[in-house]
Image (tube, rainbow, N blue to C red; front, side):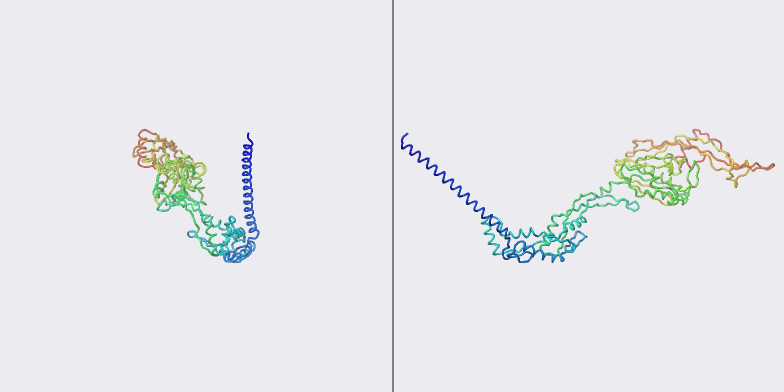
Length: 518
């Protein structure tokens, strides 16, 4: 290589090195400049933070805090706010309710420090150049600031929450109100919408209002949430499924009272799906203390006086209404004698010690029980969900067989219970007629649009025949004494023929079997 070429190459290399050094120098100077600017800004901000003095013409809640530090301003403003705390009055309303909170109701608090600190930075935020502009505006114009009295009320959140709890409510679905003693058996309760308080909005309104006044009135902002419903559809969701009445027109008043009293225990009863109800548990013990009177009851096939006589008519009336409503029967028993107010196999005998009527709501919705009476009859209505379209239920009683009685049984009056009636052998007094018995069955029939589609047997009962009872005196008549012929005719054992059975069936179509004598 030539000497000149080497020299040229060296010049180029030196020039390149010179440029690189200049660039590095520029970067160094720039970095220092940026550092100085940042340092100046940090120094400026730290100086402001150390002094925190307010610009001229700065007022907080009407108090001139010009030139004060944040701490000095805080003391002055807080003292003024606490002195005025007694005049604070917050009136809140929601519909027809109202609440008043006064300054004396609140504890003392100091939550103004961060607010004062924020105000003290007015015109001093941003970078250095922006601060100069903002500072100039702040110095020339000043500014008025308001701190809400909320900041000196220590337990305001607790007080407001108490009021909110009185305003807010859970939703309640529209429903039917069962009122069995009224002409309108079901009334629509439109329920209520859920009411929620817009807490954020309420607190914001209180805060904003207490910046400018010590006495404020605010309507509590609420949100209502609820579903619309069809009143008529709700009414049609519950219908009368059945009604059944029995007559007690010929009963004495004591017996009528017992029947009514027992049924009144069920009037207004609502039975939930799957719930089981006992007649005996519902009515309680049939005692005079519970309001029941003496009346005829059946004991061992004989009518005798007893407290609560007639209650079985109440249970029987309820039982038949339940059957016609297709409610499940868990327990039922027949009387020893057929009842006069219903067909065979449709009575329901109750006794506190050994027999009960028990039923269960087997529907998907509640059933409602209404009872009613007048001087001639008592009745029960069952309300609940609709039957399937066109479905109705009827009862059918079937006499399977007549069970013949054994005629009269002659019993000597050894205890002297009938001395006023009979004394000597050959004198007779009838205590009880013999009665035929019955084997019977009960059925429920299901009709759709008037056509029988199903029949099911629900009962198979045996009403046992009853012997007649004739009492005879025990004294031997003296010699030559003639005992007058007795007008009591001794009845022989019954013979049942096909004609007898047919006659009884015919009678059953017209009246109830307890009215029959052999």
